[in-house]
Amino acid sequence: MGRQIRDRLFSLLIILFGLSLLTFGLTFLLPSGPVEQVIEKLGIAPDPELIAALKKEYGFDQPFAVQYINWLKGLFHGDFGYSVINNDSVNAILSRRLPNTIRLAVCSFGLMVLISFPLGILSALYKNKTADYIIRYMSFVGISIPNFWFGMILIWILGVNLRLLPVSGSLGWRSLIMPSLTLGITNSAYYVRRIRSVMVEQLSEEYIAGLRSRGVSNRRIILLHVLPNSLLAVITMLGMSFGGMLGGTMIVETVFSWNGIGKAAMEAVTGRDYALVQGYVLWMGCIYVLVNLLVDIINQFLDPRIRRAMADK
Amino acid sequence: MSTYRKRIWLRFAVSMFFALLFVFFSLFAGNLAPFDPLQADYGHMLAAPDSEHWFGTDQLGRDIFSRILCGGKSSLLIAFAVTGIVAAFGILLGTLAGFLGGFTDSVIMRICDTLMAFPGIIFTVALVSFIGTGIPNLILAMSLTSWTGYARISRSLVLSVKNNVYLEQARLGGASDWRILTVYIIPNILPPLLVNISQNIGGNLLTISALSLLGLGSPPPTPEWGLMLSEGKNFLYSAPWMLLFPGMIILVCVVVFNLLGDSIQDLMNPKENVY
Picture: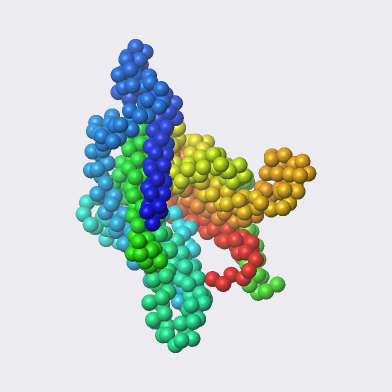
């Protein structure tokens, strides 16, 4: 067990290192250097002496490795860079907007679980019956539907035609409904399919036939045996999807003008605010890695085989 | 042939037919479109669908039906290009990792881990914002971020065939590493990868539409499905058809390619599908 945790932490460190290297490396893809970019943005004439002086001051004349280490040092002090366009530090901008994104992600995630679990289980229990076919066709369309378009159709129906909900913005819980519906419904289609196939697989296992032959009731088999066994696989998938949801918020936030970090990132992309884009990638990467670690730990505690092994030690 | 196999073949034939239909329409869009997709017509701005303009017109009076037809060219062909490039790149790196092993293997796999550590679309967007928008850069960015799946699968496939006796025989016969790789290994691992390739087209189409909706793809006058949606969003009140039809065509197209991918998977699976 200790070895497992050590390996996991080690791979985590490698991933974080790779993430920081990739993010930092982005700067070198710019057609011109960061100093030139800033000068151009501020509308100052590109004077070579000024550029050289600024490069020296900010350390851009040093080799890649030195620049990277300096940048990394900054990260450890919580300095993710400065957004010239917003005239604020990247950390301040992102932490101001993060609560909105988390609110949206949690609501959509809850909705997704509420939709996909009952439908997936229903579909597996009534395999090849009418209910199963209807759910399967719906989820097939669901995985093919562009989520941004689904959101726009919701705006058109609920916002424009029925005037039930505000069409965009991030004021109050009413404007949270449509973006959550969009993310929750489109994401659940995939999980309905996965939950169904995991359950069907479990139901065809031999121990189920064994339980049946011993006269255990169907309800008992499903509630006490099939569901707990399926849950393990499903939780891993769900954990991964929380990260995917954070990625998906970028598009949905833009469509609904929901003021989260995804929208901030898109504004940074259109405004060529490179420090903010970098900060966004780093934040997202770290959140995603942490969520995955958490899911791993939860899974280890849910799996009785591992739990027993730990208790023995 | 069992009825099950027959059903799968039928599904494959139908989805293949529609997929080819989409490709055909995109390739010959220029000849088939009733109007010039770029020609503004200020007498027919935001006109509702009628017998002349089947899907209505947009804010500049351009015919939406023609724009969707011509948009297929960019949307669909980019999806094919991305899928092909990503697959080739991923399979190459994955086979190299599996075949060479050792240091190369660990470096490639660690890069994979890192890229898979967070949602690909985030890094794609970041990359595009740094190297600049436009179709070639979009293809490049998507290729750089999404090859990891292929690399993983092809690596494990290579490992599973690597120790076969016929490879030993080929080596004894004097075949070079390169020849073993290209003549013996890659043809062997390609069929299972075909399933992944066919299943990825639909998803790539969705990603491309999303990215061009966000303004990272082709610049405005180009007819492109995602771009048409982002324009249509501004005319929700007066011209909902600007939003309805491009989205619908993306949906239908993705459904067709997903169906095709699923039926190819079922065809490749020798045993009857119990699920």
